Amino acid sequence: MTKILFVNASPLGRNGMTHILQKAFLEGAQKAGAQLEEVFLNKKDIKPCRGCFSCWIKTPGKCVIKDDQAELLEKCLWSDLLVLATPLYVDGMTAQCKTFVDRLIPLAQPEFVLEKDHCRHPQRFDRKWKFLLVSNCGFYEKDNFDALVFHCQRMCLNFHAEYAGHILRPHGPVMQYADMLGAEIAKIIEAVRGAGEEVAKSGKLSEDAMNAVSAPIIPRSAYIEGVNVYWKQELAKLQKQS
Ligand SMILES: Cc1cc2nc3c(=O)[nH]c(=O)nc-3n(C[C@H](O)[C@H](O)[C@H](O)COP(=O)(O)O)c2cc1C
Image 1 (cartoon, helix red, strand yellow):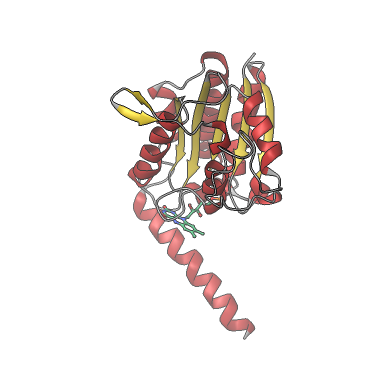
Image 2 (cartoon, helix red, strand yellow):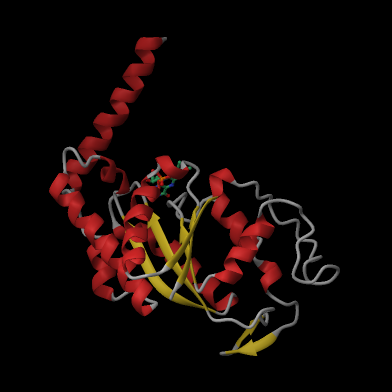
């Protein structure tokens, strides 16, 4: 039975678009019999890494900062699959997500080894680990995720983890308009549910599953128009109040 740790790294937590994807993904994974654990980083106290390397020398495998990351490291060691769910922030992961992954370094050892012609740190705990990326973004095009995908793939090499694939939702904010775009959004939710089921069963996502969750929901021109109307209205509301 696959053990999945789903880490929601949106500052909006349960109120964000990431959570819409999370619910569908976990429904699918649960259907396939996976064991699930969910974490909302916006509810956790995780301070930035101090770069002191105590976790490699003075207290091997343990960070000197006393906060919620110790509990999350335990959960990571329990899991077979780590799902990093971060909205796209300035072409990358959120600060909360980066802080969390920086603080995973107690899982590595200080030495260098040569692997596939690259320097790597051996892992401290002998285990097979997989990473899956879940992201959504405000811009329309899917290639906005390119830098984040590359980053997560490189991170997998550093953590000796297998990249299990990604669930990428461009023009993510439309996911909240199920009242207006019911059929289109239901299709995406179903695709995300299917992706959760597939990854829980096989440990990775097929190209077909990844493409289905990223399919366009509305035409780009309509999206741009809708977004601009939205921001105009928000600004007008504020002007009325003042
Ligand atoms: C600080 C900040 C930076 C952002 N940077 C990008 C970006 O580089 N590209 C993009 O397409 N969307 C960007 N967005 C939009 C978010 O990715 C989008 O609103 C997303 O739906 C938020 O997900 P959430 O509701 O789960 O937090 C940014 C939003 C914020 C607040």
